[in-house]
Each structure stands twice: as structure tokens, then as C-alpha cells.
Image 1 (cartoon, rainbow, N blue to C red):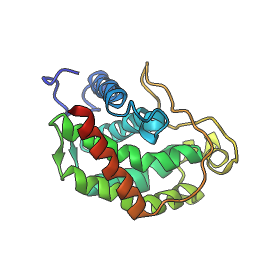
Image 2 (cartoon, rainbow, N blue to C red; image 1 turned 135 degrees about the horizontal axis):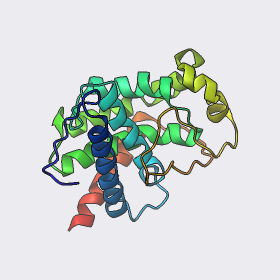
Image 3 (cartoon, rainbow, N blue to C red; image 1 turned 30 degrees about the vertical axis):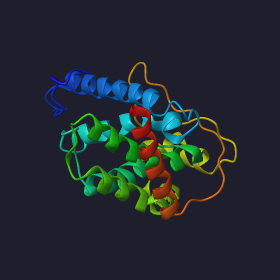
Image 4 (tube, helix red, strand yellow; image 1 turned 120 degrees about the vertical axis):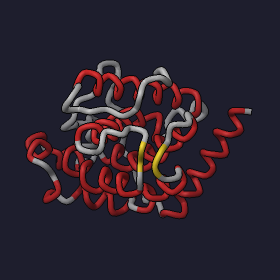
Length: 208
């Protein structure tokens, strides 16, 4: 994606350009994941990152302010606690991966020099700190939108071995849904921050 492409879009004024910018930025993120996380082929961002990033950008363009480079704690919380539970049907694995993928996206935007709004560390903490609340919000059927209810979102969330991700939003051509596999065990906020810091340190080592 050319740095000359502005990351502010207007969905109502130019849908084609909006979706093109989202797709191009998602593809650039995919390449970032391939480079930065090559040593961890089965980590959350490899498994689910491109899907989550596309979903975040789509939300920002259609329901948010259209500034794909501008993120605040409020944006992160609205996406995770309101939009995702309402719009996206997901397996347990995708749910557990999503906050980590949100963190990785803000670091990606920071690394490319186009993150506006709040600091990447603050945004990452905002995603990690609501991990349990995010899971609870997605399991509460009262939060599901009509499209998600029609897709049978509950089966994907509570099924023991559901390996398919069904979404209320569409993916761009060339961006595939993540592989979803069974997962077990919980994570505390402190443990998640430790893993995130270790991942950041690993990224720095990889650049040397």
C-alpha cells in the first residue's frame, strides 16, 4: 500500500475507494505478520490477525469516523465490546485470539509511522484489559444483532469442535478466514501483558 494513500475514507461518498483502502491495508498487515511472526507459525496473529484487522478497519470506515489511522481507547472498547459481539459469529479460538490481534494491529500501525490518536501501548493495554469482558459480551445472546442470530452465532461460540468461522461481515478477495482450532485454559491480564512484551522484544531482535 502506497504511503501516499490517505487513510481517511468516506464510506457513504466513495464505497469502492473505501473498500480498496481497507483491503490494501489488510494485505500490507498480512505481509507484516509473515515477517514479524515467522518464528511463531501457530500464534494468534498468524491464525486470526488478517481477519480481525479487516473487521476493525471495516468497523472504523462504516460505523466509525473513517480515520483508519486514528485509534483511541474508546474505539478499541467499542469495537471489542459492542461491534464484535453484535456483528461477528466466531469460534472459541477466534474469540481468544481477537484481543491479541487488536494489540498487534496497533503495533503494526505504530511501526509504519501512521498511528494517530493514543499511544500504541495504551491501546494494547485497553484491548488486553477487557479480555474477560470481551468473552462475556460475545457469549451473551442479548448482544447479538439480527444477522448474527440468523447465522446461528451461538453454535460457533459454544460448540466443542466447531472449526468454521461464520461472520456477519464480508472479507475482501484474497483475505481468508482464519483457521479455528480448539483451545483450553484461561489467561490473566498480567500473563497476557508478559507475552505481549516478549513478542515486542522478539520483533526488535528480528530487526537487528
